[in-house]
Length: 204
Image (tube, rainbow, N blue to C red; front, side, top):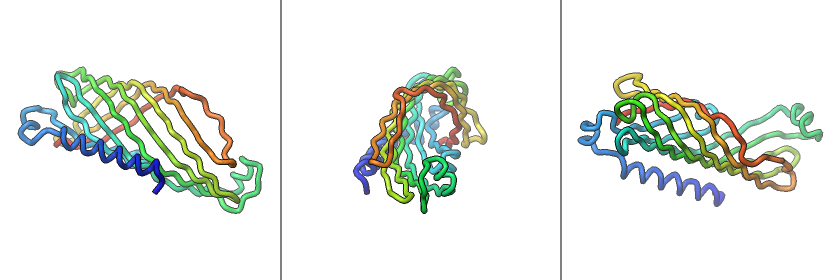
């Protein structure tokens, strides 16, 4: 297993251990109406990004959410399309991704209690990917994206325990790419963008 992947799994393991120690007991959950939630990103599954996390009340209307995930995807493209893009003849065209993503987020709810209703969030995000491209050569590219941003979101009950979490907001990220002889890409630092999505949660 590559060194950066081992480091990623260690980091994900530490986050899971931190969350396990920080989750409230059943008695605490009963006294705090919103308690803690385990969450998953359903749309990430279609992109090969298996991301899970947890949110817990910390004080007043504030909550802390930590998510981490494993990125794994394989894509085979049409050879003629690649030849048109690169201007070279190829016999095989395959791209393989592996990596991890970690995102902590601090939330301030506008409702009377944390864990329900509208909120503002501030987050940081780290995503490290190793990409292997196979054509008539094999090249390896490593890409690290460090980002931060703000979101406006809303959390709502779908059932007494199942919740939905919608969010959108501006973000900025810095991308560092290292590549072999066959990869020549130019990327800008501190790229602005919009982050949006949905999480599904389960109240404990």
